[in-house]
Image 1: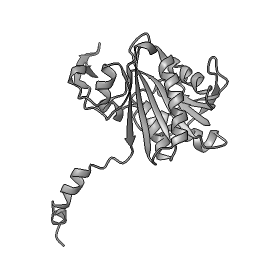
Image 2 (image 1 turned 45 degrees about the vertical axis):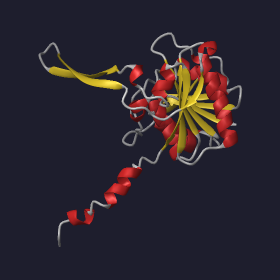
Image 3 (image 1 turned 90 degrees about the vertical axis):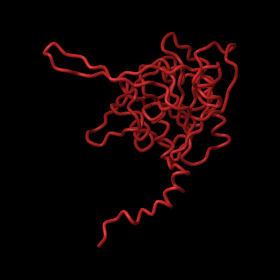
Image 4 (image 1 turned 120 degrees about the vertical axis):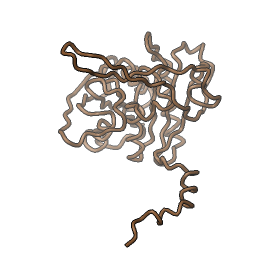
Length: 259
């Protein structure tokens, strides 16, 4: 099993290192990851400047590794089209420090790295840990490696990926695994206006987490807050089926300017 590992926290991130070491127990691992933190970079690729890579080393691992100047999506493209002798069987992106649930998915570099693999037709898994401090990566890394084996054995539909979130708990305290759907917004956004020493305004985009009690059962947020690993299947087709049907009755041809 050929495994490509990337992330958005950068090549030096402990979560990446833990994931690589776990994946080496089940397959042949190659790493292409950003050379610095690219969190919240979304599904962006670099088109207007060159990308550079340099060899890197993963502590405690044998894997061939490169650090790249691009985003997580760039790293997947670099690996598949330039650095690897053969396409990987599965791509893992993580382990992110902090969860990626709800509307976070649209911003997440972790999820977007897996999305780029899905665009290329490669099964992919995004892995995140629900921790802000004192992360315990071992459980998440072990689960992700075992899940990668399952994915390669069972297969996945085209353009699909799995978004995995793991509680920051010892294995004995994790209550199990739930297959979930994406929850709603997890932050209340706010904009802070401040003034620099020259009297000019500047702004910080900030947010506050909503209460876990607000999450609906069956969602990623609800599972995670109740001590379960959340596994959410995602797809690249963003079409809204109900609105698609409704739009047919809008008689949109009538909005065109008459000749």
